[in-house]
Image (cartoon, rainbow, N blue to C red; front, side):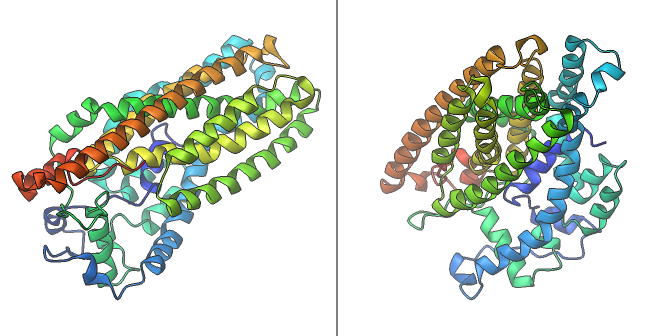
Length: 414
């Protein structure tokens, strides 16, 4: 069984392949045969002869399959308990409905406790070591130890020029404009970056967006088989009826992730999915409840990676990003602890209380998302004005690098 911190470490690793190490780290690590670094003189034009799409496809084919398998295995210990319930788990263990709900709740306590240190260890020990270590009971984790690549600098399937391009691309993410100085993100570990993550307003606002998705996510994943069973279907039929829901949701998640990257925006998709969830949870007529949860699931699963990626895109500096995403996912998954108590056996088959609580969290998530959009837009416009007035010249490149996403050269993704 995967550890409770594993799923969120995978969230961080899958989203964007954005972890890379500093030149100093490469030089000091005897296990890294490749000490490639990007020269300070490198510009985007230096890589004009490379096919960016081809490189990204190559990375996706090498990284995503194994990471997807690890993510699937790490989620099974939470998701399949809902399926086990309608097959007699609760009766066999002689648990009351309240005791069963508390069993679901305990999954999430360790998230908040271990998320930040786990993500920092992920950075220090490398993904290929840390992820298999905390999944040591699973055979595939042993395979992952040998096939996962840690950093662009050590990816043997890339050419030297391609590795240099990926390092350059990651160091300057969030600064796509050509009208101002390009500043590399700080990668040296300092505790101040961790503390800055705890003090950053956008992480805490984003946390409410995350709760708006994760409460419905766990409410559905833990109780979907029970909700369908209580509509009058047999256990085996209820299990089968969950399949088309998840298949459709998975397909939509891939499609909308592609579209979101294509347009370079997260909020329009995230907010649209929130509205879909509201429609689905508003359906309480027992005859169409299945249709309602179908709509909800098809909104939740595309929205979840969008919310995680949105924050990742807007945090600069590897260690601040690690800490920030750990706060988002760790504290955010306490929403799962709450959601595990939303659906009570006595409320079936309409589950008005459970759906009402989900609607409350979704509404808060929508409000928080709009706050982020307004704030990011305002900050970006202010920084554009500062750049036009030459305000960036009062800072050295090192100072701008240390500021990370607070630098005037950084632009937040809307």
